[in-house]
Length: 431
Image 1 (cartoon, rainbow, N blue to C red):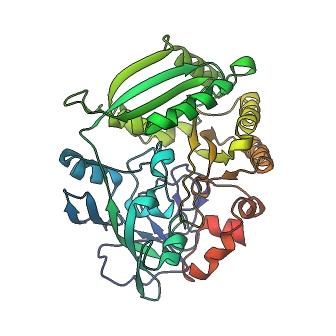
Image 2 (tube, one colour):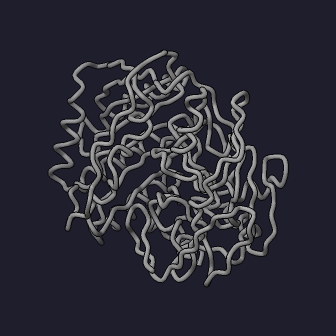
Image 3 (tube, rainbow, N blue to C red):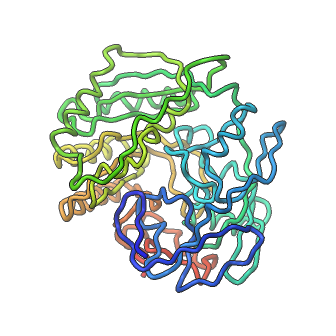
């Protein structure tokens, strides 16, 4: 059968799906190569396996143990972050690191070594993983942690599912008083204002992120809203928002175009008249704004979209980001939700982990064919010249040469690859 990632590009053909239900069972017989597959929220082809088999892990969805005194959780790899929050939040615990959607599996969060708005404080997801069991295609099992089999831990964290199947995980959560955040939103008028505001905020705020108007140009280049937050000590606050809508079908063309992109960005920027706004917010709209819209990926039409996330080191961050935003603004392409933030100095153990010190920019591009791919190639040139990197977990088109330059240690992963595991992404960038 054919299959697609969340970005709906590229389309993988002749994939076979095998549902896993028992973490203690051996891997079932499969056709061609295999690849673990969680909830399908990866954007590019790192979760696709043309001509091979996807080992679907959502059936591994059991909680094994939870200690409400220490916040240590044991669960199977197919458990969603949303399901963890439902279990632990009422007992005073929260995810230590979370990406921009709660609908990813724990195994997927490890395989992509996801990061969040608090990287400068908490690092990547893997920093809070106490260990996991790795099942190989030869039937062998290993417990991997920073102390036991640390080389296998480093290869699997951010290893895109290529070292074997994660069956279950032990994770340390972080204590909170409730589901609310104390949020400050600062409106800033240019990219030059972002960097000192972000640097100053990192000292006192656990969560920092900026929304950027990617259509603004000239003196307004890089303007946006900087949003910083801490967990609140409030005993009550606003409830969780209801899902606004769910797109029931795919429109025949992308609903994101040059005209409405520029109009929306201008309206969104000006919606906050005050320079600074304070609010008490439920965690869901702060961490997961797009989760409020079911199947939001359909908005880009049948050709899908390509998400682009890059990081540029501190010494080149402001000039590099300015050049990227100028190129994007001139193209007339981009998205409504453009995210800019600073990564901290924390380094992940993962060989292929993406975060590193610097500024990171993430946005979606409607797939308009050759023009889109040409634009992304131009952005790659800027990132490479600035000494940066592009996020493999969100990529669908970078060249092998670019990947190898962004991740020069990639070959050290080779001894740990499962010989019967592969993906569309890995074949594209290494063969």
